[in-house]
Length: 505
Image (tube, rainbow, N blue to C red; front, side, top):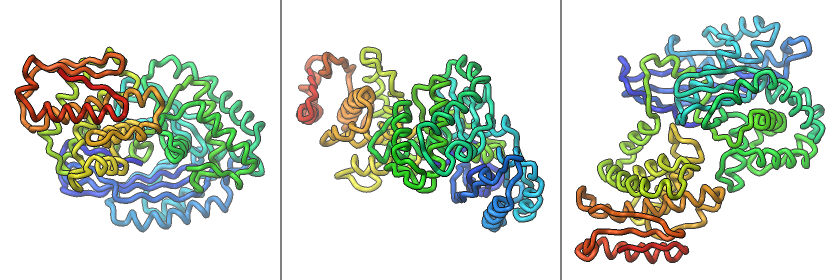
């Protein structure tokens, strides 16, 4: 989970703690944040596998064992909540507690343990809170399709910016599907087929409502999409979730025969038992809603609950605020970062249409990389491009998808010194091609800004011809500026070494 983004307005108190507790069908979660000087920081997260949904019998009654597991988990949560003002705590129950006929038995003792009211929210409210959590922590690019596969329900939402437009909650989840279709922990082609077909049946009444929306991006909120992204990253694939990857993972599951023998590189032990069932639901969603690719969101239900308590919060550009925070935290020269950014954008706009740079969110990657290209100076100068890439691999960037952050990291890694083409290999070919162009633009912008002063450069023309980059200056300008002329000569050699061509005149 990414760190929550900053808020813009000051709170009356200099520092306050807030907590959101999500009593889910598979796990119970708690997130604790500190609001200090107008900024929200995660300071604690607790997650315990309770498998509440697995305790539902055919009559929708929770077993005594599952009740005990839930209460035992809440004992640990209760002590942590003692330090937080009652008004700053929100506890919600979701699908399994909606379905359970003996929910009152659970709630009575659970509220005594926590000393807090538990709100069992309906599916639409859960979907709304999930969307808000995603919207506050992920960048918006027009209409967004948001999907959250839980233990006993799946929420599907289309929204724009902070507003959910259309939403639904379906009674299908990775725990309930495991109990129904993957009996005795067996993973078979027939089990997958039945699970996928049942998910399609449940989706049939609502799918046209979502297909009719012209959404620009699809975001997966935690759970199964997060597990799949972790698998892809571990296996060296820096890409969105795509249907062919899901089919491949399905076959890997079938080849393992049993859940106890499930061995997929990058799949965590905690996720293994419910991975095939969650995967089946996700395949059905991709097929029925004609999803081409899915990114991972920065947050979900718990983040929505937190921000619902922060009534004064208004955040219109989470990416810009993230960059501002990072500039301050890592003591980056903001004036120079903006200088390089503006020059890189000027060069980018000259070739954007020519090179069809719409596939990747190229401008956002360019802005992020130029603003943060000196982040590694926080450690030391000599290899600050390498240090910068390392930091960007570990620092959460609210408002950026994992793929976009990976792109920024690669550009920063290659903004100076030797060009590392191996860093482009984890990306799909079309994205790697766009990244190579962005790397060349950022290298030129950094080089041309070497004197760290404004109004020194003339009008510069840039174009690409058969992958050759041609940079044109006014007559005689380079000759009268030997420093930049020498730097460009060295840059020609650096690009030549990796098969790129640069011409300057």
